[in-house]
Length: 217
Image (cartoon, rainbow, N blue to C red; front, top):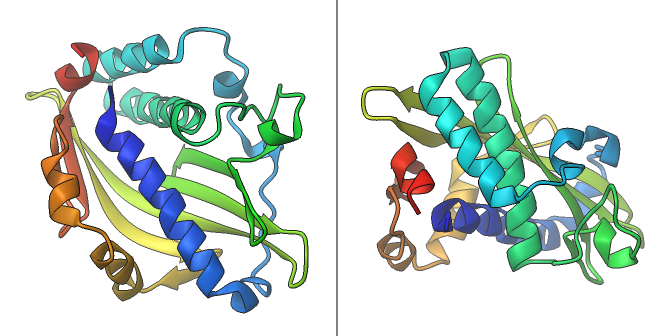
């Protein structure tokens, strides 16, 4: 279920881990401190079934006004991020309620700690995915990557489309040539062919899918 967005979230994690290792000294000069106070508490403190919550948000997007659709899509992505981390990366991840050290981070190794991924709608009705990374040993790093997506809703076909617009390290834009390079390291044709819901285009950095692809799974 939800294979594509799961792959997108995991792919974002991979890009950040690689970029972090490659730019460690530079990153130490770019300070952004994302904390658990920035997390969407209505998602991370929810007690319901996460899959059911996502399906409800998708149904709401198909029936409510455009403004509500953006809000519901933000909630949907945050639920998906939380579920994807728990299902595919760290099953103990629960930064607001967890009691173990492992519950506090997504990825932790000798080079870095990746602790939060947060989706939020911007004033321009784009979607910003914030990825928080830290390093406690020398050189110390506390910073964040921002992935900005354009979002389009098509009510006649009950579908939506995400298009990657820009990537930032704090307020410094990362050239598309850099993430083109990381994409080229993967087998994008194979990734696209394995997507059984919607259409993923890694040349244009777009993904389009209908609501029914999600709620009927």
